[in-house]
Length: 413
Ligand SMILES: [Zn+2]
Image 1 (cartoon, rainbow, N blue to C red):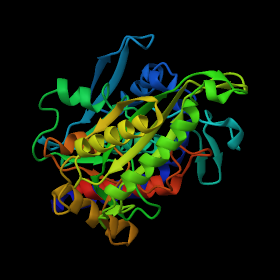
Image 2: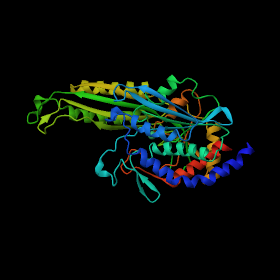
Image 3: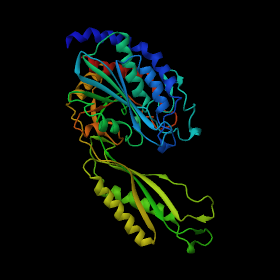
Image 4: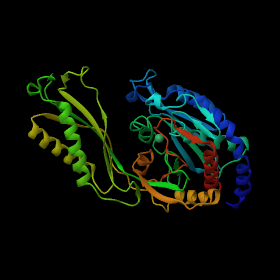
């Protein structure tokens, strides 16, 4: 592969000139919201049209795979698959990013408009600039650079911009895997830039299993001045949440140092709105739990425990409860740190950033899981301050530029 070395330095020398392109790209798509219907949005259609118009300029082949979804006005959740032909066309180096974002949350906590790309020095602020706009701009910028300099990569360069990552990937990567057989081939190198740490040393090779639960507690509504005639579902719901919290942490408390954090996590999160007035005792209380479970435990086991705790609790207190699974991702086999994609990245990180890569597992779920389930190795990596889903989400353009160099070095050498 020595013949690629001059091509690589040619590319490397031009990376810093991508700064304006990246900022303008952000300014183009961040204002076009891409929220799943579950999050009160109308899907990714409009954002995808914009991104297709950009990708068209730099990639040889573009295919849009539409997952039908009657809940959105266009009836479709688009997934963009773009490739640049390489010298060896039997393999592809893939970058996979997602177009959808989570909502902005409490606007009062933002110091900038969430749906504008606000530039302050080297930082760009906005909902989705990191998660997963960072993967989008990186993936497109690499394509632009190859095209602008007329460099043919050693194998195909592929970019997938998918839908529906934030609420389970059913209309995104899972749909692609299900309908596009043979999209990923043995020997492909796959990078998912959707998680990372702040110096870019972490290569994520494993993910915890994910279980989202909805727990409904039913008591009896009544007047707040006469609680004996009612059964306060809110109070019982809080008590049940605490009991679940305690039992799950107690029963599944093992630690695995590969993961950060090393233990399984069980967090009570969302609570549904109940009564509208202060003087009514709620007859129904609905809360949710987000569980991230180490691969050594089975989710069936965790679910059995949750159901048992809820049944025992309701027997004691005379209420009824319903436990529903809102989202479930069983664990996938971890990627071997010695796999080609991980090793190429690790070498490139050393060359470009001058640091040693470390291999880790995380609690967040990414696309990688579904690809790992097919026993294809995937590296999840980028340089990230971890501001995704938070107010004032931001990225540092210098991190993106240096990440582009790492990807080029992984691919071209
Ligand atoms: Zn993401």
